[in-house]
Image (tube, rainbow, N blue to C red; front, side, top):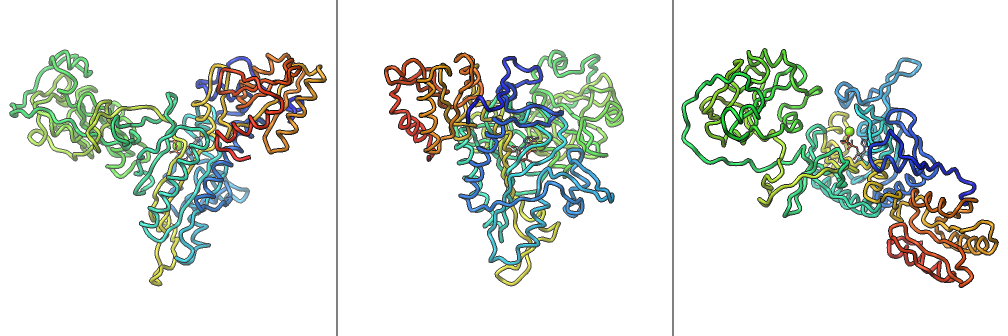
Length: 570
Ligand code: ATP
Ligand code: MG
């Protein structure tokens, strides 16, 4: 393509609406434009990258024996009613009615649709295993669309669904996807790690998220500093800290006026936050849940929700509920005598001795409190891992980093097949529910994550595998016939061998061209200037600082070498 004939929409200024590098650079490089909150249009360079990532994903899926499919994004409500999700999915689901008042949704994910397809198409164990995938637009009315296409309301997902005859067979299908995902993300130039993920809400038995380490990630990931263990914070267990064993002391109620926060308490009792237990009160739909944690701990909402069997709405209780449960002002809640539907006690509390809690009486606390003697509850792991907690696998220190979830794989088991009666006839002639897995990759989010990991102050540095174009030929002066002739020859020759090549034939200063090309991030630049009199041109990689001066006749080989280095076959 000749740049003079293309729409180039680069921006010099950093747009005010963007908060993170990938969002800024996608706007500045003229890849996307916002149409509404969380809704984006893709410009020519943007859609090129999307297509390239889709190709990498498609090749990876095909190599893993998955078959491409295309389902409709418009889904009749009946399927969602059958699975039970029509009522529980909540406000994220875009719902609409047709002219006959029939209800539909725009698919945020396609378990129901593929379970329906499977029950119609799969009859016998002889057709299994089967893995069907699609690359298709999804709709989610996100509470907080942000960071450009990282979290948008319309996005492209590769979603795959596997169907097997048994749990053992599902394990195989799942592991195949696990390996395929690692290959796909590597090929996209991403450094990413599979981490254990929560599977509570979807009701499955195993799940992994593919996380790209990044400051801008919305997920917290727990890593072991020594072994390979990694898990999403939502799921990660930590080893509870065992406190030094002590004799139980006599429970004592103490007047603590104006002492409300943990800091106030630390001062008043002259101890650290580890000497206290805090009692948090939440509303889970209509139920009141009280949770007791050590003073320095954070509540893990996912673990709590899984323990209480899920909740549509889960939020901190309002002041009125707190006062009803504790018969006291906010700030004096404690486990002794609290009125709640469920009292959850973090396992660490069981190993604490003579600690301090709120007394459910305004202005009072108890000291010398002990679990089992002064109160009881449902003991479990309800806390977030803290930096430095011990790994449950090897005992070394855990550390916490932020990550962007680009992919997610999930063992669904028979949740959907049982609900929707998707069965097959087994080898023994009996009817059985299909055993399912589901596997997602966010195409647009992957694009943004690649930019987060591959950019500098001048713009994007696309890995060769997903670049919108692989090479650009830049004549320094479009008025110089000699330069134009050689540029055209190089361009034609590269095109002939299948390179995706651009020619910057715009009548602009070369500095302006370089600025645009660096911003857009074309990996290989060949500059045709005055050096042609010596038979040379400049060869520059976007990822390197230095130019190479090479002979005109060796351009093709140098480009081929670079493709080889990146395992890209021409
Ligand atoms: P998140 O926790 O970030 O909302 P999710 O768990 O809802 O993600 P899945 O339902 O597992 O995501 O979807 C599969 C993939 O689709 C995700 O790994 C992610 O890459 C992508 N994805 C999900 N929601 C969005 C969104 N709003 N915008 C862009 N990509 C998304
Ligand atoms: Mg989500």
